[in-house]
Length: 319
Image (cartoon, rainbow, N blue to C red):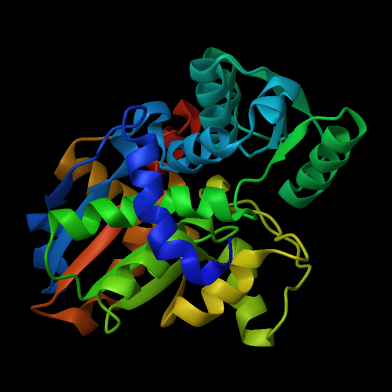
């Protein structure tokens, strides 16, 4: 598959995975609409099985594998959500495999992977190191490496979130999406721009780990350190050959970088007004909206609330 086929593949993926995932609500937010002057809608992927959008890409990838590859088993690397999604999907489909996580991964996310049926192993302190190790391990053991973002089947799976949004809201003027490796924004942005080329796609990142933002500015993937951030789901480096880099460059209209305090403030606002939990990466997208949403007064704006998996310790810190 080449990236030009992504919109069509997202539609196929939506049909393929429909029996396994939850079609999440797109809720109008009076609170954030009042704050920005835009008509703000929240795509509640925090309500997805496993508490994150990652399940979409996981199921699409596994359901696209041959019988032989499924039999061989899978290997994933993850700061948590991708690992839980792969573990859940493998369990549902009768596959076995191993999930590698960075050493500092939150216990909440590790427990989620184990509860989903995953065999968890720790390696490295940066997500990129963990990914490299997992890839090598898969190769050495004749297993399938399951990338969190550097895979067109995974990206098409994440794009199913965009397929649902297009069905749920006829006119979308702008969409705010948190970015780590770029799988979600690549899939959703590609699909929604195929429906409405004038859509503004806004990539949101924490200042503590704005690797994609800085890489796009530089015109090449940079190897940059990441500082601790509430948005552990988007933290870390990007693989040197990541297909998401070129897609992000093509479809993203604006990059918004937010501080830790902006992320925490956004999370508090969401928890207070919508009475649900979200994790830091979802706070990044909402913080991006609050930082530049004034540009979209009277327009229809969607924010993808990408996940809910937050530890009690982090939640205490935020509140």
